Image (cartoon, rainbow, N blue to C red; front, side, top):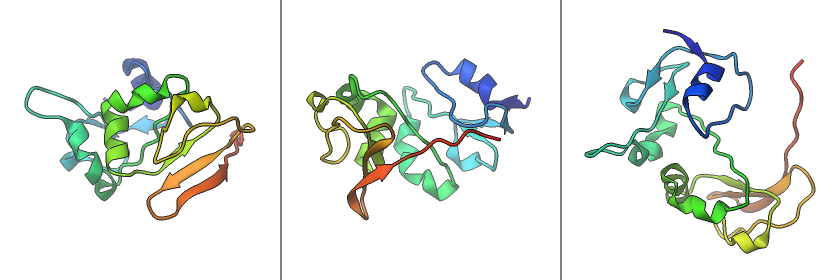
Length: 139
């Protein structure tokens, strides 16, 4: 059964779509060993396994992901299994505008008041750098 990203989004509470919601998903997997081009990976947690443990190998199988959330309450995100694992493996992160009272969100960076689209990107290779993102509407 083929589905679109919009249809998958409707089945995943708390998810958000960035990009083309009509993108067709070939298959849905919970096992990274069977992923192929156009597949959607869903990290499951069970009694004897936790797919979040396999996030360090995600790049090796060509998985790309963007995890985004508001900065309000973001300090609690450490308890989220996906965000916690991404921090643990030192994945790149972008910290945007927000209250410094949230504390350190990624690396050693706290949010601060920023113009729209401005933030600090944190990478293992380059450390902390200022970044400006822009949104271009699709034609």
